[in-house]
Image 1 (cartoon, one colour):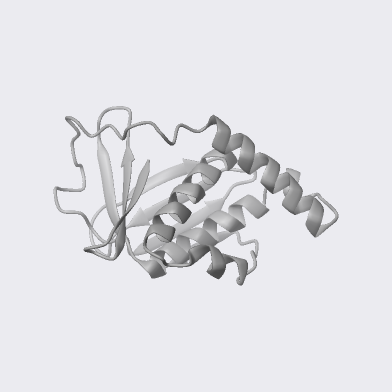
Image 2: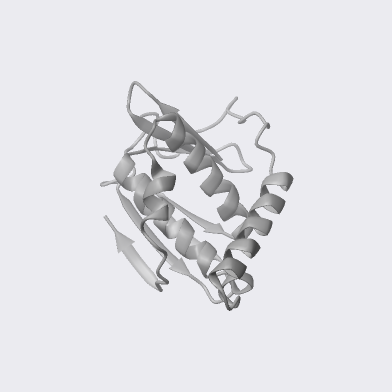
Length: 166
């Protein structure tokens, strides 16, 4: 996965590779980034290790510990492999438009990202991948001075079951 802020577009380029050299790409707007961040934060809050803490401080401490551990194990320095990739959604990069998600009882987040028309992608995210994806999103948004971290801090998490946002 890669998220890069592209100043000329004032958007984030979100790229996901599969193991069989297929690359799925989307442009992410500020609005969509806020929606995605909210979903990722809701998913993190649903983690039983976090939600079972009796105090806000305890929840924050557990989230911070898990974040540090996941970031330590992530390979942020690894080059994004794009040589010889195929583009199943086409050469032109679609704008991410619809976000559908479902938090499963096993803790997995089923996420669907789709353009206004045509195919999209479905991914399953565990808590560690969530932390990595959140970090990528926040870093890209910071490069665009979108202040996404401030927005999330002012919009507390709410647990949801199955939501379609467009």
